[in-house]
Amino acid sequence: MDTSITFRKIDVLLFDGVNMLDISGPVQAFKTARLNGRRKYRMRYVSPDGNPVQTCCGMTLVADGALDAASEADLLIPGGQGVDDLVENQTVKKGIQQRASHEGEARLISVCSGALVLASAGVLDGHAATTHWSRSQDTQKYDKVHWDLDRICVSNGRIFTSAGVTTGIDLALDIIRRDCGAALALAVARELVVQLRRTGGQSQYAIHLAGQFTRDDNLTKLIEQIVTLPHLDWTLESMADTAGMNARTLSRHFKRSLNETPAQFVERTRVDHARGLLAENMPSKQVAVDSGFGDLQRMRRAFQRRFGVGVSEYISVFG
Image (cartoon, rainbow, N blue to C red; front, side, top):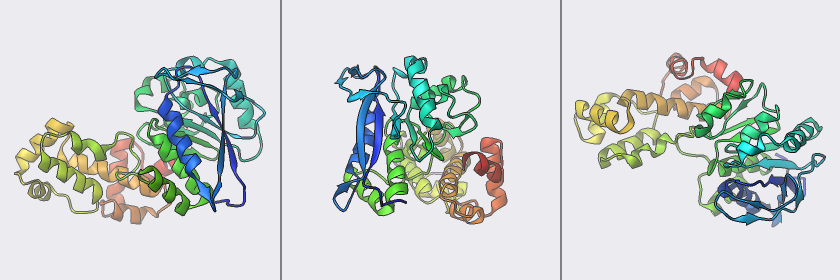
């Protein structure tokens, strides 16, 4: 955390077909961040050629200027339909590569499919990254990147990627926390009426929202309790009691609503919770207890089933 700087500069890249929420979400979080009444971030809006752009929702945005490869400001690249053309833009790719080669602390930050632009420039090669789940086919073009599309945010040194849309706010809050401390990040989250850390951990598939789309209120309440209290002893019998139905009926409802068994849902919830704790550098044994596995061996087996690697291997790649 560095509170000595007056403010940090961020260039926000605009382009035709950009997603408005990918811009406005993180930008509003950065603009809200103030210490002792002073803004900690200053935004400048740039486009590849300095010209106005039209967002995917039809709104016209005016840039402050053209993308400057020599700038020492952070660069935030949002996503949107226009990314498919942007990944072929040689000016943008060269600008990203030049910024990545600069010494110093300037960051490359992507929201949603903006990660594909970073990948096209080669700056994600050998690093873990995430992007919107709907872009899984596109990520296959960049096989040197360690994609983890079940994460909402991934950071590697000076490079930050997020799953997109509202997770751009999650990423901005994480950056604010790193720069200015948890107290300011919490203040920004309260001002925006969002969670500083999502209940349910890291998954962009938002399993903690799954209960909102079931047909049964009792099942909804059970799912919310499992996600909130993954450390409890969630046997099939205890889940059935909580939901007010017998075990066979509960299993049938889970299969119909979530296409998995109650036990599979519990394990997925615990793995997701564990990943969030591991990202905070909590000792693995304590993570196993707090996330409900009880012991490290059970957690290792769950990670092996979910990701094909053990906990230590997972940490080394995605930690």
